Image (cartoon, rainbow, N blue to C red; front, side, top):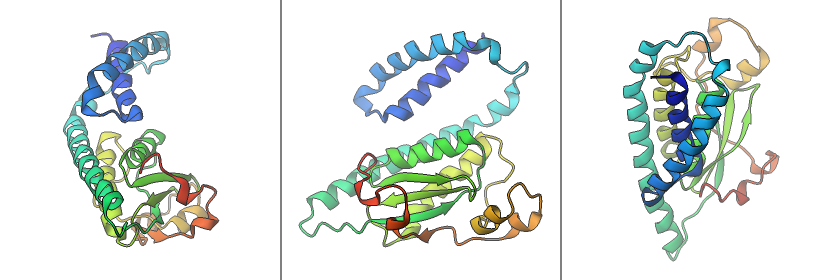
Amino acid sequence: MRRWIGVGVGLAVAWLFVRGVTPADVVGEAIIGLAIGFPVAYAFRRFYLPELALMDRLRGLPYVAAYFTRFVWELLTANVDVAYRVLAPSMPINPDVIELPLRVETDLAITTIANSITLTPGTLAMDYDADRNTLYVHAIDGRDHESVVDPIRSWEDYALRIFDEDRNPGDPIPDPDRVAASPGTDDPSIDGETGSGDATVDAAEQPADAGGGTDGE
């Protein structure tokens, strides 16, 4: 099969993630994605790498399926949770911003995780600090950081395999302060440092408006 066809299908799948479609809209949005993806993939076919590590990509397929399954589950449960909070008389909403150091480092992996966070009701990827390799996540209920961070860490475990990252699932979370202080260093002690994994950030210090992020909530 010509490579541009496969790339076009991949762009169509990315289109579905970007659009955040519902089950009723999947077919129509998939057709739109293919209509856009095929011409773009064909137009840029001369810029493809000369070789494609097909076996490496095939080995990543189980992790793609696991990522998608976990994402759909979190999407469904988050919809129910947000609906309950909106309808509950007490409105149990306690917004907070969580600092999330990442183990993934490639642009595609970071973008995939950030989009997954934003597409999940109740959470929003507000900003990304490239120097610290850190995402800032706004949560509709930030009292229990672990309940917010755990699903994202699961996605990241799968992304480490899907995008063939240097780190492995289960590796310690790097300390963002040390990463920012030593950009580009090969010092293995950075990998060995375990950060807090998440931290509360004063929303007023962030460039985005934490209280106004409703796209993902």
